[in-house]
Length: 367
Ligand SMILES: [Zn+2]
Image (cartoon, rainbow, N blue to C red; front, side, top):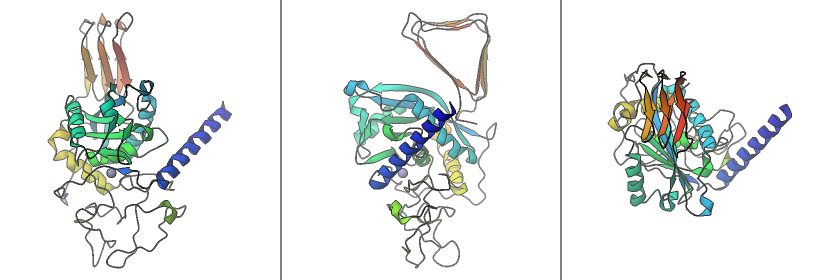
């Protein structure tokens, strides 16, 4: 058994390495997210995020995996791989008081939306219409492909929905969902130049880190599309490319919002400044506030017979079904998601004899 685990780990590492090399070789494999036309709000010096009940802000997620009618109808990614991919996002966001709960996951059969173009307004509108069907969830679309050598895109900064290419949303690839959700919550690329080129200096002359680049001073001045061959095994930048003040760029190769997808000794991460910007963006964006889950618990003692219809029960901490007779069956589609779900005697969940679905999911994205 031990031998098998080691073998599996070796295979995973090899796959991760191959994928990483592949991305490095294809530097054009990028992110389709555009910077907002107007500069994001500056974060006030005395900003403190609004705390919710438990201190963690929980955002509801809904995942839609596209599947074409051709190619034997294979979904863009396996559900278990997507869940493993989202576990990376939990790790990246938890230090900044943001976590998630999966409200549901479904497969959407659509040749049109199995491949999307980040520059297409028609695709934007089509995805927005679907995402808006759940105005309390952030929607992650997982597609068969994204055009233009793009691995993922947020459909705005901020935004309530993002698109990811299925082949990058797996357990061995830690950054794609974290990166695009970062945009959705207000983050820019560390190498952004839309508001001006960021200078290296943080003190003295030339300092512009709060008004140029990614508008944050705790991410080093970075450059786009620097090949991995220009970093050593410690992820230190080997060239002496300098900013206009003559200072050599430091780079942020392990930052979630950069492009440097290489194996660094430092795990992929976000900074405190990026955490503050995400929280500040949530505080000032009603559409994102609407996606926060603040209700802690649900308990029912009432008898029920659910034989049809669609029901989503999503609560932060626990769901308790404690009725003498609580039956789900027939064509009823029921999703329950919470930190803990307690089904007492008297509860029967069945899909026998119908085309219903029952999903009971203990939330693993907020720990
Ligand atoms: Zn991006």
